[in-house]
Image (cartoon, rainbow, N blue to C red; front, side, top):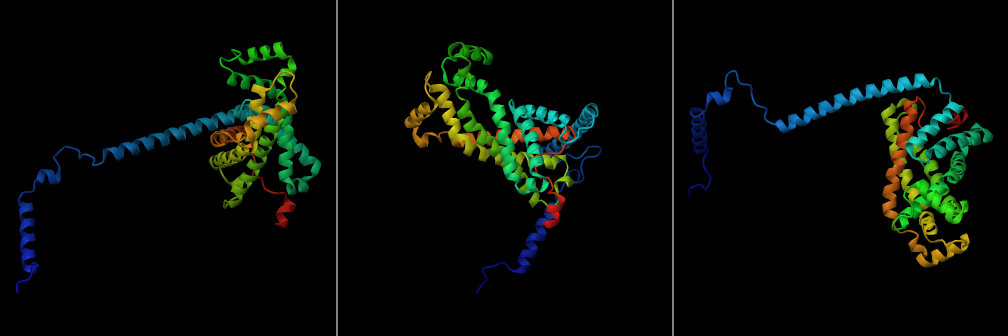
Length: 333
C-alpha cells in the first residue's frame, strides 16, 4: 500500500532543486549592495525615535546644568540659610507663595509652628507625638491664613454663583460687598471657612508628613542618601495621596461654605442658615461632586508639594518629611 507521506528522497530532491533555482536567480547587486551607495536603514521610524530620545536627553542635561547654576547663584546671593532662622522662614514663605496663592501663610506658618511646638514638647516627645504636632502646627497656620483669605473667598464664591457676575474684579467685588453689607459681609463665611479649611490643612500636612516618612521607610536607603530627583518624586507622590484624603475630609464643609456664601440672607444667623441649607440638600447633598474634587485636589496638592519642595532644594534646604528620628529614639528602635 503506497504511503500517504512523501519519502525522504522526494523531500531532498524538491528542496535541493529550489535552493539551486534561488541561487541561479539571485542578484549579486542586491545581495552585496550597490557600490558607493550607503545602505538604507531598515527601520527609519525607530531611528527617528532614538534621535528624539537622544536630543531630549541632551536638552535635559543642559537644563539640569542651567538649573544647578541658577541654584548656586541664588544660594550665594541669599547667603547661608540656617534652619529655623528668620531667613529660613522667609524662604519657606516665598516657596509656599510659589506653590499656591495663600501658601505663604500656610507653608511658612506651618514651618514656624512646627518648630515652636516641637521646642515646647522637647525632642523626644515631639518625635513620639509627631502626628499631633503636625496637626497642631497646620491648624494654627490655617487659622491665621483664613483671616486673610476669607474676603477673597467671599468674592470668589459670589462671582461663581451669580449670573452675570456681580463684580468685574476681585477688588471691585470687595468694594461692592462692603458697600452693601459692611466689612462684616466679607467675613460672614469665616466660621464655615475654618470648618472647611482647618481640617483640610491638618490632613494635608499631617498625612503628607506621614506618607513621605512611610515611603522612605520602604526604600532601601535613608532620605539623605537620595538625590534631588528622587526626593522631588517622593514629594509629588506623597502630595497626591495626601490630596485624596484632604478632599474626602473637607468636602462636606466645602459644599456648605459655597451654599452659605451664595444663599445666606442678610442678617440671618449662622446656625439658622446652616440648618435651612442642610434641610434643603440633606446629607447626600453634602457629597455632591466628591469624585471630581478628589481628582482635582489630588493633582493640585501634588503640584503644590512638588513646587514647594523643589524650591527648598533650589535654595539648598532639606525637603519636607522623612527626617531621621532623634539619636536616642534611633538607639531604642
